[in-house]
Image (tube, rainbow, N blue to C red):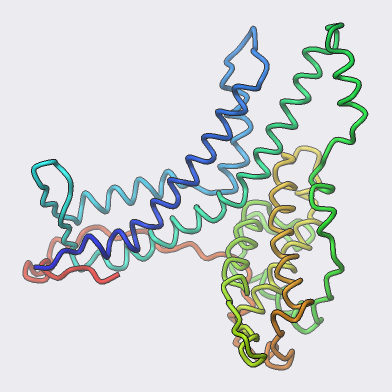
Length: 330
């Protein structure tokens, strides 16, 4: 029987390893912030980090559940053969795990993409908050008054100014396409969705990241002009990302005083990436597909909300034993 571990590590394992690396980056950001944060005489010093992480966890999604289900799938469906050092050198999967593995791979990859996007603005937000704390703690200490004055003279960066140098004039999305996006917001919307003027933060951010990840960022043009036009679905996902971004920036939920500033920073991070994609068209690196072709795409190409994958199925204990010898093809 051939070894299935290379296929596992190349595909399913790769998404998990990538997500672990992103988590390590987030951990490094938090540890660095904790080293710089002023010591608290009262209360739990770790509470500040936990509070700051709440919007991060909300945006990234319940990755603990996903990882727990990965572990459960391994425990339920794999059979190990270990060498003398205790390492797994052969994994044989039950054929019924194919569907569950594909679902988990997609979920892990989605968590990793969102975490990668949000880590940088989260770090900026932490450092800005630490700066404010330092100013409060040390404002009455005479030997650092000069430093505080110099800091206060500099304009404090905000999510609106962090990417000011990258601002460009976005071309308007054609009305026929924008109308289709609006119609699809009513299809299987989140429970708390009322209309586009109050685009929900978590679900809106999920949709923004999901569709942008499947847009023209996945397209590598060739040298000839005929090889510079991305797929129509990739281009419509770029337009969709821009449309979702616009609605989120105008959302009453985003602009509520109670909303964590991290959300604006995260949107600014995605916006900078969208700007880079639009610039590829402005500089003729890419050529947009004809509008009439885009408008005629199937209706589902204009869907907005991310559809949750079905729950994982339990092991099929009634399945024939001979089939267990089949190796999972990822």
